[in-house]
Length: 228
Image 1 (cartoon, one colour):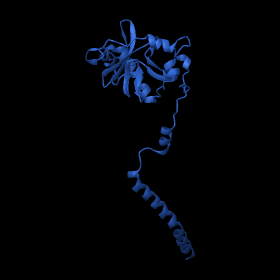
Image 2 (cartoon, rainbow, N blue to C red):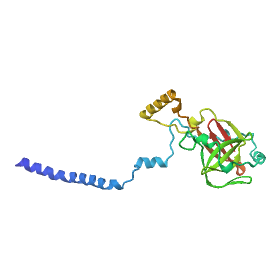
Image 3 (cartoon, rainbow, N blue to C red):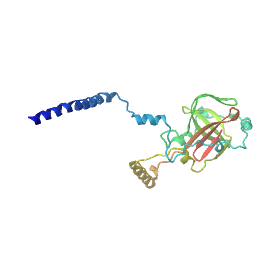
Image 4 (tube, rainbow, N blue to C red):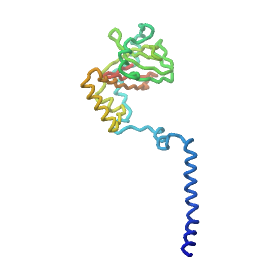
């Protein structure tokens, strides 16, 4: 009889805790359909800028872009406003650059305030910057919705430093399955040349404020970078 009483007392003490545990689970189950898909750690990661360990997060020094011996003001005065245009404002070489890629290989420039190059006024918007050569001179085409909207000359073209993209672009971190897939695709590409994929050129873009209200825009495309 004493054992039965003790057992009942233990059950009476334990029941509230089990009931509370079930209620908590029940509340979680009823709230889960309305909960956000994003978990708290992911929300925090969106508000903070992080870099992989093999990416240099330090800002690029101004010396990488504009040499001290370049007179920006005089260079600006000497460069002529482009007087040529493309038929129907279409870049004829764009098809060759994009035929092997799903997305555009050109860097995207988001402009929030108007820029001026003498009589050329570049309005705010989103532009794909494309380097093109014309009569042995280099220009940057500002494309919007697939059409050339502005043409601005370059004052300098040079090779991209070794390992620049490796140090300034995030490196893809692949899982074991993705690495096996990439190796398989490369093996197939070596065997069947027609199935070999051509790599998309690496690109980078930077705009730097200079003295006297000037802005230096450097377009990195493949093995070269273009100053304007």
